[in-house]
View 1: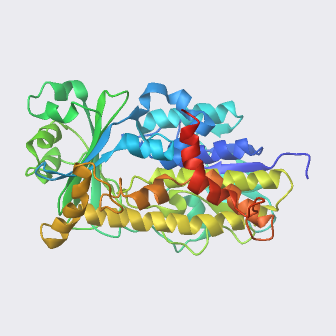
View 2: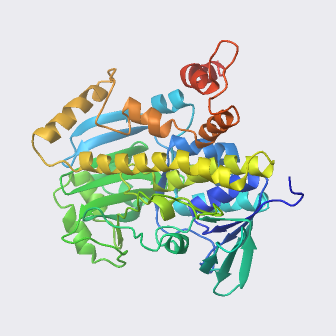
View 3: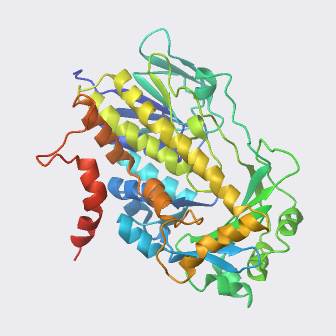
Length: 456
């Protein structure tokens, strides 16, 4: 093993790039992040840290940095656009089963927490360092040229530079993200204090809840952020044409008119929004590869697999990529794997996971956008047992559907990596104990309730 640490460059200091930086620094690599913006920060509003990534925030100590700005909510209510409740998930039941919280948070607070942990781990964060070119084919080393900071040479480069990724454009110039439909989203914040003054709207905020109002051409999802002081709204809608770029300063009457027939309680809150932007829902891939021929450059997050937002898994999937890659690179740092082997394992395991997320995200949007008719009535009927707290095996409410909860929210990227690596070092088959049981299956069938029993 080399006496010098593996020198890794990450293009992009967004949520996915910082999560990757943390995971790689924890793996023992020397990590430098190149960010094009003049200062670190995140724009936008709320984001869900679903249990599949809240476990990473806890494991990495990011949750301690964010503190009370990581908000937990009590329940999810699925509604028709007139406010009729048709589905329900008690979040404590889900959290207790998975032994992880479901947080909602402002993107800026999440980003700030990731920055603090990355810096504490020794990650170098360079702003005003827009990458303009990559040279990765002449030698095993990778050279990154930047607009204002000169050139950098790394042993390995991770392109975490989002939907407009220069890394992806260099590796795969013929690939371009596309909107699969005319679906777009508004995002907005309204202060809770303002809502409390409205005698109709304030009923919605009596408890900390996540609410979804479903309609054929639009939906609204809401939840509290910023220590419960801000009411976050994501407002899905369709346009006459496909949109490929964010539109700022949208005429506010367009937003107000889009939801004029919704439940008066949420309509009153929508009318409090005084400015917004319209965001396109873009999908990248699936790609045939995420890496360069030498495996010295690799993509993560939206650069590789941007997806629609209906399952709140875009940033989460990027964080999973980083966490999984970190465990693979740890084996390179320790001299147990070659870099190309680590990247091959990462691609083989994470590419189908990301593709599955893209599909389930699109399908959840289709479920929420069903027009009035037989399919919509069937959707609501199979959610109905949730309203009485009855046992059910499957639900069209994917935020509470047992299979989706286990597959998506119960996933642990680092444990997945450990299982795959153990199999790799054992000739392709996961090791078993004296009783012939593999650890991953023991964890799946017994570990979840033993963890709960340990609290008793």
